[in-house]
Image (cartoon, rainbow, N blue to C red; front, side, top):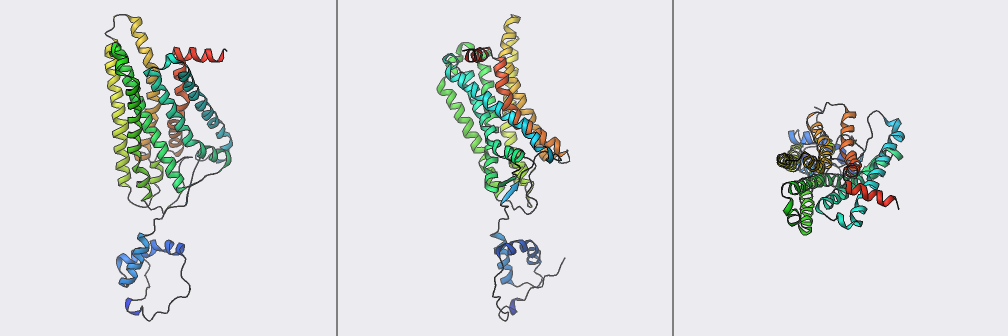
Length: 363
């Protein structure tokens, strides 16, 4: 360790004042080097220790910007990679807006199943709009810098919409459970006010869980690289750049995954056990097939969302030696594929929506 040559406390009075004060940035850069000396007390007076500790505590070491990244090792192909992303965004926007327009226009579609589908479409639009500016900026215009607070805001919206999608998929599973297991009371149980209450509860729950994340990241000092692994900001990606203990962030992130995604997925799984048990009590094979067919679209949406999401979470926390390209591909699949495929799946598998689309374009 280098020796710290500071004047002693007793010689402070005899030291000549320096006419030019050091720049704040220089002081900040020197603090990590001065800190071991203050801890060890290598000939440093109490006044100087207090001054250095005060400067250290008042400095948050937050980068002005983060640097976003595309696919590892494929920087020269960014313009070509931008083409499928543009296709993803256009398909997601058009498909989800089309579903919303059809349900809004057709009065006979103002039923619980299709109202929950509208919630899913609005949420998918939110996910797409949250990532669109930085992804297109990175791949189309090579603009990789994002301000620190803008990155926090994007992280908040991405995770909020992810948690909301999980809650909406759970609500849709409850809708199928009531429709198949108790069809006579379906309209009485899932009234419009109750559906609005479920939607509001999903939003409030997601906001409450994600709200602490920006503050947990903001409290961390960042004195390493400011290069992220994706073209958008995620909590797990930002916290790994910190040069401090991130145990609180890891524990909170793991608890939210278990509390939101884990419980939601478990309840969806239990719902389908009850649904399948009820279906196999039906005597007619044709009625069984018809009942199962109403659940196929939702099952596909659940698998498209939960499998990549769980894979991304496990990779970020426990499989740090995984190839960076695999990590990026799984994260891309998790955020971009469900908003694209959900309206397509529901349009193909739902006969009423398919007829409405045909009717709209045949005029």
